[in-house]
Image (tube, rainbow, N blue to C red; front, side):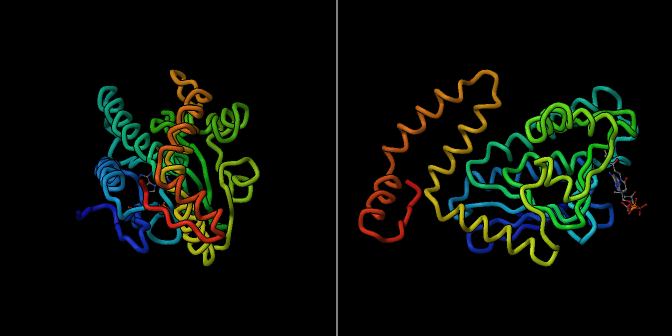
Length: 259
Ligand code: COA
């Protein structure tokens, strides 16, 4: 499928998604959010896609937020609809049964930071900057930032970042748990690809179940412990389990077939 605001390319079973509005710091306009939502339908459905890497075009920004010029004249109803669409897309990314890594290669501000936080893992380049500067504009994060930032950095630091609108550099983002790793720009992509490769070589149904159980922890209607027991039990019913244990006993590498 062709997209206007995204570049997509599948290499070695990994879908590389590039947010492609470099001239606007990859600002997330409504079309880009809609296209992200659509491309993840493809990720869910396509058995040849085993993992996803999301980055920003150019070397300045991952994404500098929602498109301010686009929403500048929105009313309350339009603002709520915009947030609804963002939540829909980002929830789909977060719940994706395949690993999703954000390669944060510059500014990750506002919706850009929220998109990175919806991904399972964040690899930052040395020049990355994270922040939720919405209060400078008289609004607040609308794509899950008030919730996911707490989950990653804790309530006190989240409130500080959300209320001051301050940016943190890559090293500080790493220190507070917002970035998993920080690397020089020329090494970050290879590092992220290697990590995806490592994850996608594991039992894929087990990876999906790990994501599901971790998500259950943050769902107020779910009992994550009960979910773990259920998913652990189900994993014994898979061919991947048979293959994984058999390969161990036969002292060879497993060849998982995703069943
Ligand atoms: N929405 C729309 N356009 C944006 C944007 C956004 N969130 N962020 C950057 N841009 C555009 C700029 O308007 C500019 O466009 P122009 O060349 O047509 O004037 C272009 O991207 C380059 O940005 P510029 O501000 O000139 O670059 P800079 O290096 O001086 O500053 C930032 C970079 C990221 C610090 C600055 O662009 C910024 O503060 N952006 C807004 C961040 C924000 O508030 N995000 C939350 C939105 S809810």
